[in-house]
Image 1 (cartoon, rainbow, N blue to C red):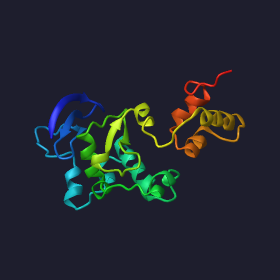
Image 2 (tube, rainbow, N blue to C red; image 1 turned 60 degrees about the horizontal axis):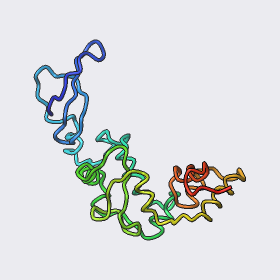
Image 3 (cartoon, rainbow, N blue to C red; image 1 turned 135 degrees about the vertical axis):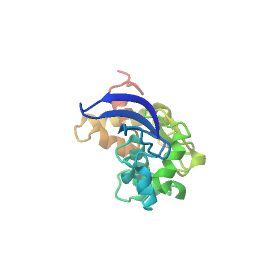
Length: 194
């Protein structure tokens, strides 16, 4: 591990630092160890046990882990709300990405940022390195398989006006992002003329 910055006494008793872990390629906050050199943040112990589970790697609460988990659920879990648009259409996750660490390493080397979403260049293609990239939500929406017409936009507005549908339910019904549904309802896009 490499010390990036000393953070001082956080809890009034021990001095901490921000470190770069060469093993898991992440920044971690650890107590300074009075000159003792540690080779990792502790993640290597889990790998040495043969356990590649990301939850042992302290990554289950990261946005990237959730992206990976949601991607797998859409393709592999028939109980997932989005399954019919992904796994139900034959879209799969490549074998390499069935392990989080493999996916994480690819993502970090291919433009992943917290404000971007994973996008398949070919909306009918699989989740695999040759077909995926990271885009803003708006850029990704342009790549959706659902084509929105003025007729569909008006139908969405009318259904929402009945009070029987939430924006989330309409997003699932039309295979659109909830932000798109909100913008249609608020007449920001596909504007309804009076």
